[in-house]
Image 1 (tube, rainbow, N blue to C red):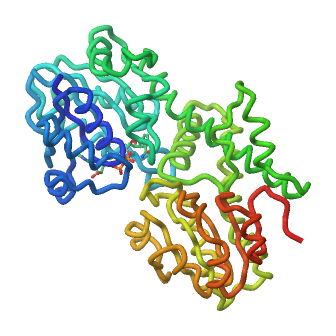
Image 2 (cartoon, helix red, strand yellow):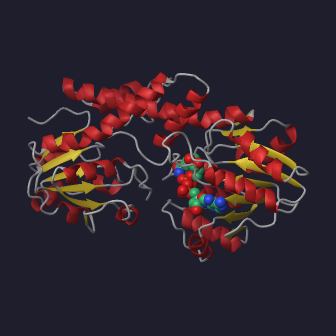
Image 3 (tube, rainbow, N blue to C red):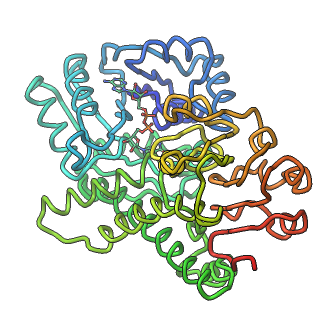
Length: 437
Ligand code: NAD
């Protein structure tokens, strides 16, 4: 089948490459000309395990190409996927749909006689109706269908998530476009992945409801972690015991410094905006957002208090900056607020992240960038682990002990072995675990 994917970010690029891998002919479009130039040369501008190899393979196979403008959409194009960003709106309320609607207008101007538009971007309920209206206004003659196909991939495991999803949600109101979408995904669904066909609004809401539920789950275990610390027991044992219940599951019961990233904060806020538009209270989600924000802010206090209440002139080494491991994505990462709060309190900050340094340089001012974790730890008065990169788990505690000025670790992710650290003379403050001393 012949497909166009508009937007070459984390979702568009992964979707485009994977759809090509499934056997389709795919053109990926992005207005960022430098990005397209790099992609045409086989250079993938984002870090996502396996993506560069897949893009290279598909370019070579001739099933994937890149363009800086939407091509003429002849009748041989089976579907156009919209995968552009939907950031928080500038007025701080809901999602900014500027990019999505701009694409809708461009699609209308390039369309032939028939078109199936599929929204992969996370968009509020009713956006599909608006896309349809925008296109119909410009092209009343067009045989048009607009479907919602929300994407559930996670950065860091995006290729596997796309190829082996838990489900594929297809929101469209008519049988003909549904059949086309089923055919597009047939190479995946024939191996047993369920398709859930719903109306467009339900599909749009499913994505927000799923992300909000996960945000609630994380926030719940974070509060249980606080209780564990007060009681003097280990949240990991509690999470294991709770998570073994199949009705609950262990995923997203990892206590930490509060969720961040490019999806949960903006999607929970956008869901609240939708609920308010419909005069419905989503108090649980509202409380989750507020609790999470307070938690992220409290993490600097945690570090300062572990350092004896005063960090002025002291050096804090931060290991991990991205909002989670195996991505270079720094959007809304909890590390950003922590760095600025510690700087505000007078601390000097050294940072290291295996993949996030390039983006960090555009976001964090006045910090020293280390070349590896050991370099970061040198002369530090405290090591703070903000992202559970696998390489941090194998750091040599004795070597770290020789490098630092003060043997103190605040582990926000329970990523390091506290026993090894203690054996090397460190005092350890770990989320949801009994305090030292
Ligand atoms: P991103 O910011 O990484 O990428 C968006 C891309 O769209 C950019 O490269 C930008 O240049 C391009 N773009 C903007 N306007 C354009 C236009 N008019 N024509 C062509 N290209 C244009 O965003 P992302 O993280 O890939 O997210 C895309 C959407 O998918 C969002 O709605 C997001 O909520 C959703 N989503 C993201 C994830 C994730 O993990 N990142 C997961 C599931 C869903």
